[in-house]
Amino acid sequence: MLEGFAKEASTFAADVDRAFWITIGINTAMLLLVVGLILFFILRYHHSRVQPKEIRNIKDHIPLEIAWTVIPTIILFVIFYYGYSAFRQLRTMPQDAFIVDVLGKRWSWTFTYPNGKRTAELYIPVGENIKLRLHAPENDVLHSFYVPAFRVKEDVVPGRVNHLWFKITEAGRYDVQCAEYCGTRHSYMLSKVEAMDKDAFDTWYASDKLSPHDESAPKGGEGEILYKTLGCASCHSLDGSIIVGPSFKGLFGSMVKVMTDGKPRELTANEAYIRDSVRTPAKDVVEGFPVGIMPNLSDQINEEQMNAIIAFIKTQSSEENNVVEQPAV
Ligand code: CUA
Image 1 (cartoon, rainbow, N blue to C red):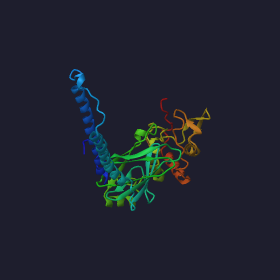
Image 2: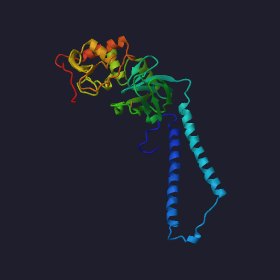
Image 3: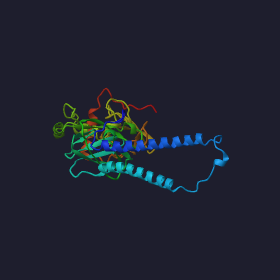
Image 4: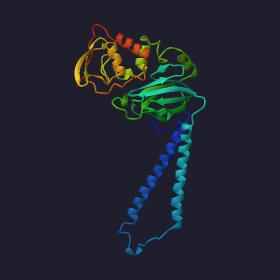
């Protein structure tokens, strides 16, 4: 509608915007009316223009009282009508919907589809009802799943499941943001939702590619898929740079300085070390990194997935690069 407003990409976006503009329009008219009357009274009834004998008290004025009761009531009902009719569409979940599970955690989004496929960006077909099942791990914090172009936003709360639905009218890539402050990487807790034509979606959905834009399936196998979709990638780089935690480049087999119960010691980054880092991250805190920044992922990774991740981390180590880079403290 206005330049700078995200495009209206869902079936109910226009109704949400209508409710918004009606409220803004009424508020603006009210503001101008009140400020205008204040200015008028200041000028018209300035003491230099009013004789004391002109001043009189008004006891009551029935028509005026009825007017200022009835008119605001009507205005409130107009705002309520447009707001509620848009809200009701957002909150009435369709019976036949393609359901995608959305895990929001510090600091990534994971989308799991009915066939078990898992991605870090959401891919959906245009013109179909999509229902999201939003949740966060028990030991995580509040997040909020927000797609401005769809006019949908819903809190993602540890320990409960929230729902959201939409039907997209136009193919395209749209921004996903976390709209609830959730710590260090809140502003990087971004993703995309891509609405695709049904045929293109079906082809991708049946394939083993992570995204429709990939040439082929990930070479690193299940471990690479987990790295990219379970949130490892949002904190651990593969190129030696420090995002939040140590880079996976050269990590395996290197010596890592940790604090265990307040005492410094050195550990070899072997399989047991990686396993402990995922299952009991609070035990050995890597020197130079904030305490408690690595979430406990015990509930999110089974043994098979653990092995796949270890295998993937192993592939990121080579002879010439065998040092864990530490951030400047
Ligand atoms: Cu998650 Cu902010």
